[in-house]
Length: 252
Image (cartoon, rainbow, N blue to C red; front, top):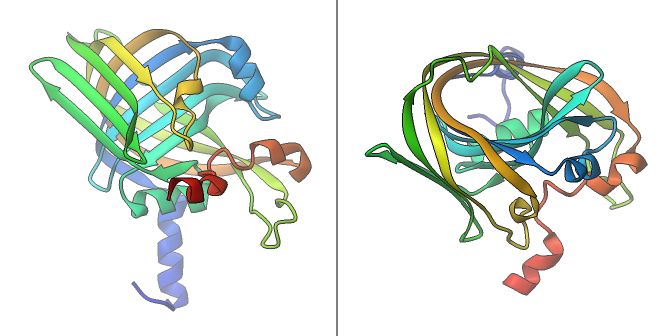
């Protein structure tokens, strides 16, 4: 890595941001039905509720292990997930998506264990387990469980350096073309979501698990800007992807 690159080197770096790609990523996915009133309450405009479902994906990849959690939403005729919580185990995984796509990524530890047809997946933050999923393997899925694309909504903005507010907000669509193989159906037997002073998992009002499965994914991404949102309108949501700095002294 260099402090100063040549123009050609910098443009080469931008090529990856133009079409990020991830290959041979094992994803353990659980889809939950949640309370529809909660979804309507937490979605920032101009997003609206599509179906009241939250998707949880625990991923094993060459670059990182992590969590992607989103609630289904729509903007005009586009349906995707609004990112609720992303956890990565390396700063590489955090910085890439957080700085370019405004993904709500934080550092944490994820574990995935599949043995004797039993799956256990966990996420820990600040030394506390915030998510645990247990499932029994049923067998190969007899129908596709992953579509040929994944869409995610994110809001990109800056906090003003003098604390006077935030910048104008861009609604971004992150799109991935997906190829899924080796899809295996599972029966979720336990879904536990817990809070920390910095995390919102326990606030999610789960109605019931809908499905669990795992698959190996190859993904190639693009992104585009969809809309601009006034800063004051978005301000109530501006800090959900931050740890509350005001609490760090109390926990030190």
